[in-house]
Structures are given as C-alpha cells and as structure tokens.
Length: 281
Length: 202
Image (cartoon, rainbow over all chains, first blue to last red; front, side, top):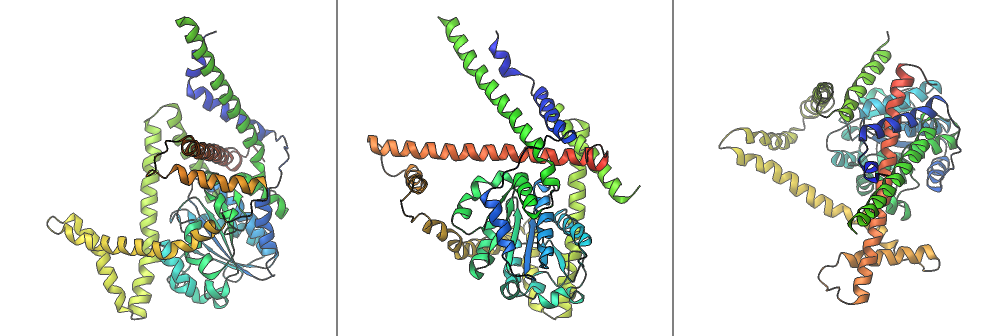
C-alpha cells in the first residue's frame, strides 16, 4: 500500500467530509447527552444567588466571527436574569459594527417574550471607543462614560432605568462578560471587578479556554462558559434549550471526524516512514 | 419579503462567497465578499462613531455643559493627522507620546491587582495530587524560562525539560480548544444558511 498518499489527500475532500458530518446531525439530531461542567454550574449559581431585582452588567464584547458561540449565552443569561426580575445594562466594547446590534437583538428577543420593557428593565449602551477609559468613567458615572446616550443616540435621561442605575460602583451587582479577546476579562478585572470587589462571570470563545484557566482557578472569574459547549450547558441549566444545544450533536460528530483524520494521518506518517526505511535497506 | 429575511439571504450568500476561498484561493467571489465586508464595516463604523461618540461629546459636553477643557485633548488627538503633511510629521508623535505614556503607566498601575491573586493561588497546601502537580508545574515552567543559569546538570536540565513538556501539553490543549471553537463557528454559519434562510432544519 502506498502510505504516502494518505498524507497528501486533497484538503478540499476533507472539508467536504467535515461539512457533511456536521450537517447530518443538524438534519437528524442524534440527541447525545450533554454533561454539565462545574464551571458552567458556577456561572448559573452565581446569578441564581443574586437577590431578586439586582442589576447585572452585560458586556457582549464580540464580533461577527465568534457570535455563534457567544450569542446563545446572552439569550440564556437574559432569560435567567429577567426571571429573577434583574435589570440589565448592556454594552459591547469589541466591535462597533455588530456588537451593539447583537446584544440588543438577543436580549430584546427574550425581553419581548417575558414582557420586559426597554429603558425600564434593560438598556443597551452599545459601543464606545477606548474601552478601558470608558470602563473607568462608568465606574463612577455611567452616563458620563456613555456620553449621555444609548446605543442609538437616544438621551439616557428619558430612560427610567438610568434614574436608578447611576454608577457601577454603587448600583451594579454582577458583571457578565462574553469576550473574544481585548477588551476582555483582564480589562474588566483591572478597572472594575478587582478595585470594586464585584463578582465577574461570563463566557468566552473556546479559543481562549486554556488561557483563562488561571482566572477560574484563582476565583477571579466566578465560573466560565466555554464556547458553544458552555452555552449549551447553560441553556440546559436555565431550562430553555436553544441554539447552543441545537449545535452540540453536530459539534460532537465533527470532533469524531477530526480525531479519525488525526489518527489516519499519523498512521500514514509512521507507516510511510517505516516503508521508506525498508526500501533503503 | 421582510428585512430579517433579506438579512438572512444576504448573510447566506456572503458566507458561501467567503467559503469559496477554501475551494480556490483568491477567486472573484471571495474578493467581492472581502471588499464588501471592509467597505460596509468602515462606513458603518464611521457613521456610528459620529452619532454615538462625536456628536454627544461636542454638542452635550463641550457646547452644552461648557466643558471647554475637552478641546485640548481633542486638538492633541487631531495632531495624529499631521503625519500626512510633509515637514509636520513630528507633531503626530506628540499624540502617540500621550497615548503610549498613558497606556504604559495605566497598565502598570492597574495590572498587579489582576495578577496578584493568581500568584497567591500558587501558595497552596500540597495535600492532594492536583495541588502537588499544579505547584510543580508552576516551578518547572518558570525554571524553563530562566535563561541566565546554565542547565548543565541532570536535575537542572531535567526540570527544564519537564517545564517544556508541561508547556507543550498546555499548547496542545489550546489547539484542541481552537479546533472545537472553529467547528462551533461553522455550525453557526450552517444554521444561518439551512435554518434561518432555507428553513430546512428546525
């Protein structure tokens, strides 16, 4: 057998196989069980243990690339928060083009379903340039940091929620941050969570999972939702399976496919090496 | 056709155009998608910044609240454009100087609060295997990055080698997470095409 061939398969064939393996369970779900990790449970419990009517700061610091992983987290968080009559102040510091719209769409979807009103129960402050400086301003005066307007340029004075929530220092009880890089947890920790001793939780793209372990271990991050998997686990805990759970079968089958390719590639590599050695002698 | 349907159709077409790169690099469909993304993002970004950032700052803060002191940083900020005027490029460095100086000082002032809890977290009771491993790995990885001591004895080089293996395991884990994340993103795009646009899946 020509083992060399195994290492030179046209990459496009692999793309098609992975695509098919992802699509099959989307059309015909397998229903694989989803075990809930301790980190996800901690996120859920941190929010669940807040007194009813608390104020949660939600920063959806993501762009379009990682939105499929992080959007389901925002939907599930909104559901859990509104169920406890918590207020939500939302921002999106990563991407001015899509971030504010994403956070608005996903919270609004749940708010409409649960009869929560924009400006009364929640508000979207959107994106501001220079996240670090904005965070520091908002610690003392949210309106000043937001330049007095919401994400669509509407004056904050006209929203009842902003009469109650003036500063992060005095009025916000929990920070929930979903991030894909910078600004990320280190910024929120430096300027808000650590100086004010506010609990910080949330989720991030799985690309960041290993790099965030130290924050979880040291207790600086109260739990963690890791990518689509974390979102699916959180949706289950909230009791509203959504887009996170829908993608888990496909993801599991995708992993199996990649593992099979890895094994085949390695078999091909070692077999070809042995074949070459035999031919030399 | 609703705006949402139109958005989903546009998104699906753009996804397929972007994916065409996987089949053939540098093809016209991919180039069109790339240019559309850059153009739309830039235009939207400029518009959004003017509406939510500049207008309130000038109208409400400077004119309304008469905070005229804000004009000084605004002028310093505008100096960045001097780089386009031959002979006056040096003025743009004033702006960069403020930016770098503030950034570095600010970072040093606030960073210890973030990192110290992680340092304290290594002061643990060595009562179980996890804690012992955690403690040992912290030590050997730090040892690996100490380049001023010769690692010429079996103990020194062995510890350094262990540190290297620990790092490789961490990078392997990170690579696995990245693969998993990219699959999630593909699933998200497939949902836009097959569920939101074509309504073929529930």
